[in-house]
Length: 130
Image (cartoon, rainbow, N blue to C red):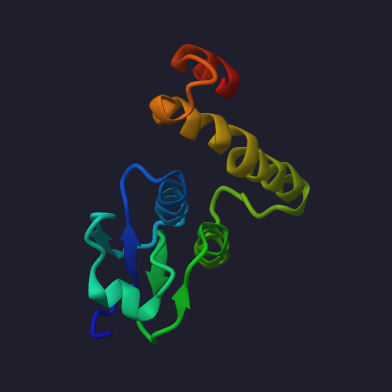
């Protein structure tokens, strides 16, 4: 990697990539942002992260961070002006992330792709996710 900035492979609508970008923003850490097209993933990204999911953060020295939570922690460990890694808040933050990753994401996918899940209406899926 030749850039002096970390390179973030992202997809604008992916909730995991969104939270990684938010953490980098809160930490005021500049990155080289590479928005990808999921149907045409760049070979450079697949070379460093064969599983092909986003977000992926490649650090200038070559280290690769492939999970959004790990990217969030890495960013905030570098600059946590808001105290988001405070021991008093971390359990609450992890619980919120767990809820997002499981229950909320489940209903969000059913809402977004309601035609694939005809058991309920799109409005019912939206209500479950709220």
